[in-house]
Amino acid sequence: MAILGNKRPLKKPIGIYGGTFDPIHYGHLRPNLELCEILELDHVRFIPAFLPPHKDEPQTSVAQRLEMVAQAISEEKYFVLDDREIKRGGASYTVDTLKSLRQDYPDQPLCLLMGMDAFAGIDRWYQWEELLHYAHIIVSQRPETDFDDQKQWPEAIQNFYLTHKADRNAIQQSLCGHIRLEPVTQLSISATDIRNRLKNKQSIRFLMPESIISLIKYYNLYR
Ligand code: ATP
Image (cartoon, rainbow, N blue to C red; front, side, top):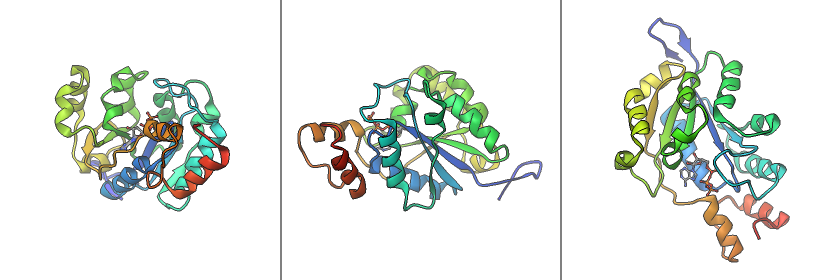
């Protein structure tokens, strides 16, 4: 347990990982397991978006995306499926999700986990500056970007990062409010690439668990 300045003990942080997962792949799974170890997270909650506000509508049904995520994380004890955005319906704004998680976990640090590509566009998210009122933001390095790419971020995001960046202790010892970049094993995989390969009748082996490939075949998805 971490100790705050005022000696109030905090439980281990919870990782929060949202995405379309259309479909889920190793680029979603491996970085989060590493973040679990690096930040000593209690667990990571995978939260599929009902309607992602910044992307095209998913190509598969909600039930199919839920099934793929549930199957992909079923054998990892640190990963948990959370369907609150699906149940809530409408546009899936992360700030709303964090508010509801904060109510469920009032005394545990929350860590919003995302790739650098997502962070580089965070200033387009609904009420983005309020995200830190409820959680920390942990940015994992994505293959096609590197940490020097910070200079290419919009100025507002550079300032956001510089104002709130913190070390690992700060993440574990406070409920919210900090940003941290963490390097993770690089896996140059994206759902878009997987969907394109399927359309082009190319193999998607070794990009995702075999069980997800079986589900994609079973439902004849992304053709
Ligand atoms: P799409 O290609 O459809 O845009 P995606 O593969 O990027 O999908 P999403 O579900 O949109 O996956 O992304 C959810 C989160 O996963 C985002 O924070 C994104 O940055 C992160 N992410 C996706 N792929 C990787 C990867 N290969 N390595 C690290 N993070 C990733």
